[in-house]
Length: 216
Image 1 (cartoon, helix red, strand yellow):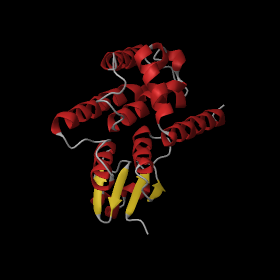
Image 2 (spheres, rainbow, N blue to C red):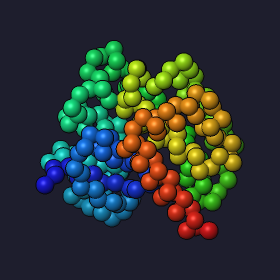
Image 3 (tube, helix red, strand yellow):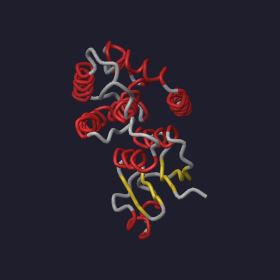
Image 4 (tube, helix red, strand yellow):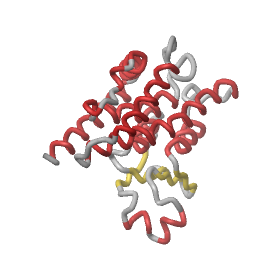
């Protein structure tokens, strides 16, 4: 029986990132789907384990971890067969860390565009501007580079890609990753580089399409 339990929301980009990393590592994870503000996450027992009552949240045999990036770093550090996804060498790891922290800012910009689509609302012009500013920064980061943080795929690529692909469903608002050449090529390259990632992103796209169709 697995020692890993992940409290998860199927459509959450941070949760998708953790599920992807676990899949790439070949980990057996017990996934429990919950809502962040649900009663399940706010019982005294759960609040003691996860004070933020947010998902994703990981329970590894009594070790309780919140925040998607921290969970991913932990999983690779403990269960990874090598350090290619999250290098041990400080000069390499710091690049991955920087990109992961950069993604915190990106996600806060992109999620407003993503959620507006779900709620049938128009995106504020200021939010579109912020999203495009983030895409432009990412495009500059990828200039002349194959991957975000070094010569191979790392956690940074998967984490940032999860945030960026959330914009795919609202291109009409004006924040479109495909209008940024380096970003577009990088996303295509990443999808071609790993079968599990390709399956993961297809499942996400299909799930979002179904949810949007159900709202019509």
